[in-house]
Length: 193
Image (tube, rainbow, N blue to C red; front, side, top):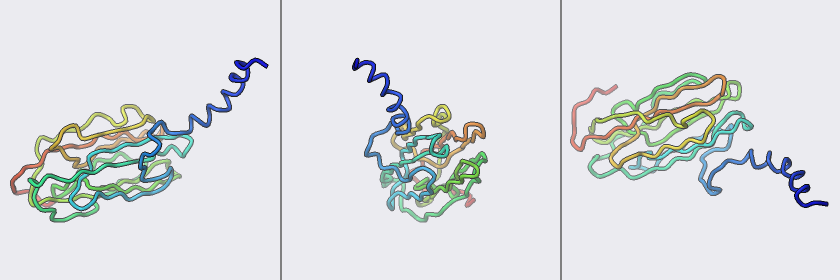
């Protein structure tokens, strides 16, 4: 039998297995499996600096996630408190910026199969009485729905303060615009909201 014929015959058998596998580094430290809730927190004195995700229609239109943290610079001062901020509802658009001038230091999420979406909540930490400035939003992450997503802080001195996210009811996926800010290196007055 012709080896090329065998290859063409076997190729359709191999494609579904390969298509279902994420296109990522095999040892990537994903914090969840598909359709599973998770709670991720940076170590004390660290803030979130990178977010990666991989989407799968076959796995409940869900994503697996991984996060990276980095120690905050000494100029931010003392870590004074941490808390879980407001939560979104699955299937809804959501904008959240850490209250009390906090920085994102963790994320928790729960999957809801009835909506094929997740609820989200940020773990926020405040340093002395530092205040944000030069804030900006990233481009959409992922750029298109159902693609792999990756956001890494573009420059040292910026911190994630929150995100704005939209949900596609048709494609059952989210796009994120992360809110990035610099923080003052001196105490300043701020509203405690």
